[in-house]
Image 1 (cartoon, one colour):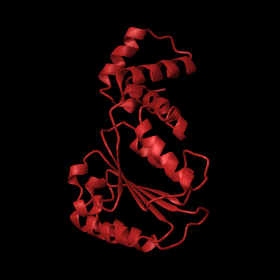
Image 2 (tube, rainbow, N blue to C red):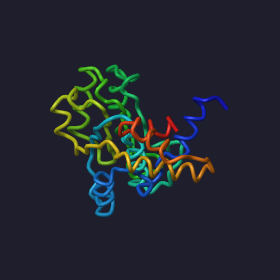
Image 3 (cartoon, helix red, strand yellow):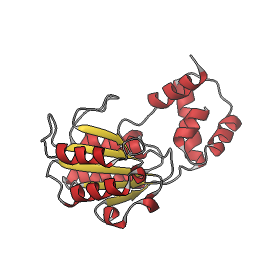
Image 4 (cartoon, rainbow, N blue to C red):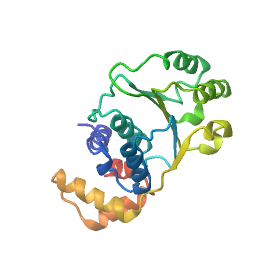
Length: 210
């Protein structure tokens, strides 16, 4: 196994698959779980914060949970993940606008997760805003970004915003110890402490460094 492949496999293996597995973002998990329990699901959410803090993982978990799905690495057909960096043109958002009115195939909600949403062009944002203003009942948007300041205020105002935090060093170190024990890897506490500090609050980076 190549070095970089090992990083990817380890991160994927220990990626959170339900809310109870999420590390260091209790202030996000708790209200999301409450909204599911009460049945009050908004049409648009905005997840902001530093890279590697779990925005996309929690978006996937939330999308699965509101539809009653068991988490799978392969996303169900009604959960659509879009990379804002590579799908930033107006055409993709126009296509989304047309497809969004089609009812979900096997779920209650059709969920659109748009990662790095700040990368969309101005025209694409305008098209997205029109969709957020009049979303069909079955549509839920989860917008994720590391650079919320680049989003138009009109888009932000249509969303419920959740700010992700850098994960504390001791929390990262505890999680790395857990992974090492699961993988039967020998480790020294000072080495894990160093890795945890080097990750600078990013759990994903910490696992990659491990």
